[in-house]
Image 1 (tube, rainbow, N blue to C red):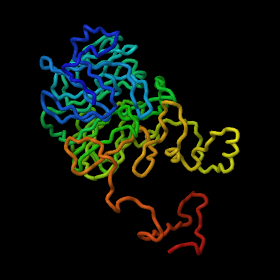
Image 2 (tube, helix red, strand yellow):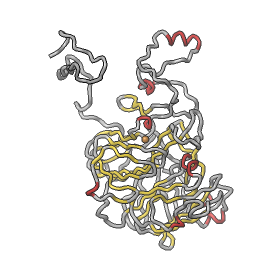
Image 3 (cartoon, rainbow, N blue to C red):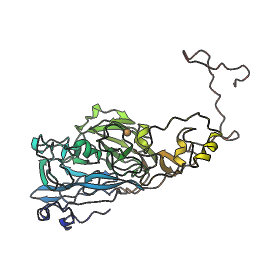
Image 4 (cartoon, protein in one colour):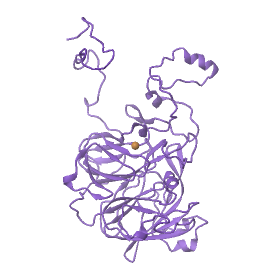
Length: 460
Ligand SMILES: [Cu+2]
């Protein structure tokens, strides 16, 4: 973690020549961070206590108290985000990162946010989901003039209701959000709320997507549908932190979607309930159990469960192309095609030629193909049993017995108790094989070529 001392660090660390340094000196420090590590929860230094969130591969923005108001300073600026080792994207974000830092306050807090624009074009900040005076809503041209490059605007309102919210520009939105401008806002309940449970682990992240050509570093900002980099908090698996929980902990996951498509978020090994949306807490009688919930565009879903099953559980978007890195969409389907003899002939002319996809695409996970610089492989990530064939919106929930309450360190891979891992069948090994399924002739209407069992070949 690289958080500087919020109260003593000089505001002069902000190096923008376009921004007036004298004016900046009176503002709260624009705390900045470039590490993509998950920062430990920011325990509130003053004010009312609450259980802080952990932002996956992110951090919480410090504040200063002034005359009973919590003051924050966001700086909209170009950033370089390491999306995965060896693969970085030129983004726009806030305070050194995309997404910007998480803002955490308590219901009833008076909040003042200074927003300095260090982008080459104008911007605003919209506080998605908040109750606030209309003129603080941040819609450029509608509720306020745009914030020109080099200028600082002030937003001020009271955080009236608890929940999970987001912030993002409402100015040249398609470009600025395609470049990664977004952040989370958490308003903790004041005291105990009957609709909001206490949890031991509270994780938050934003779903993201980028359109980046192999070898390029800057997203195509005019892309409308064809994105190829899928992220949690602008990181792609295997570079996304795991969610770590002590066995028996109640865990909350807050997931917001500011991409251009929906993402069905799926958790293995546990059932959860959606306990809240950006509209507020869901009354207990309206909740139902799920293992997947769709997070549509512009929505937030707050999910809760008891982490009572030890292990390393997959947690991912269920759109399978969102758990992959970039690939050419024009790769033809090769499954079942017989290439025998062909490769050697082609390699006489094109020495690097290789066949892809003859047996499916799983081989890609182990393929060592030369890639252009700054390219994220299509499938990557190694687990204790081999390649995971995953990239993008995928991480793990790691549930372990007896962790410390504030221990968020990656505990490594799960050590499965003997006899609890799927195993290869050996004819002389454990158990007997089940009888092969009998094909009943004529039972599948319209199915061509149903094979009739040849007499004498059936097992009983
Ligand atoms: Cu998805």
